[in-house]
Length: 72
Image 1 (spheres, rainbow, N blue to C red):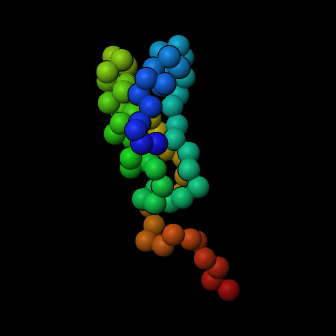
Image 2 (image 1 turned 120 degrees about the vertical axis):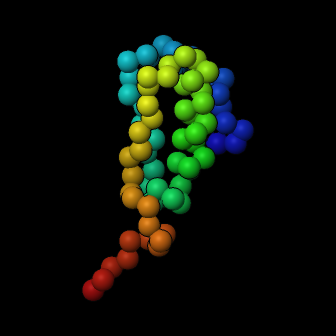
């Protein structure tokens, strides 16, 4: 993820202008790559004048624990 692949994203984000953009991860929201990717992807969309597009998150909510556990 670092350095962020701005140039590699450009052809696809420009080609598929109507596609929704979703970041998916198994880790909780505060443990995976979302916090690193989200601002960079928004900057990329701004740079290519796609300011109306959004990037959404699909994954577990933020959590203090890195695993879900088993209460029984």
